[in-house]
Image 1 (cartoon, helix red, strand yellow):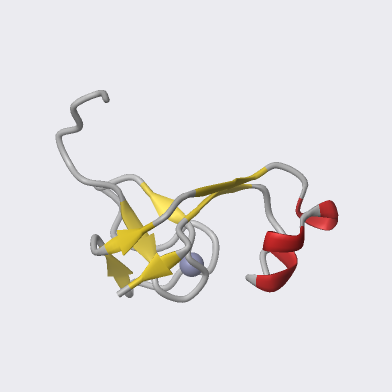
Image 2: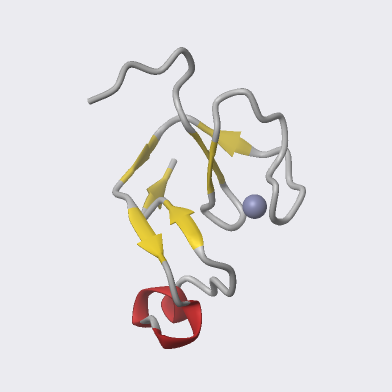
Length: 68
Ligand SMILES: [Zn+2]
């Protein structure tokens, strides 16, 4: 595992995984971010992904499954 200076954060609204230095979500603009999250899913093709459909994701990227 690579060592990171800052832990990745997750947007509580859309579950997008963000770099630790972000202050708001790059997708929905929400500033309600969490570093307490679990699970990790990479959505490559949201239109053909069951997980993306369940999570209401329409953009490719990295997402967390659980956010506290
Ligand atoms: Zn978001």
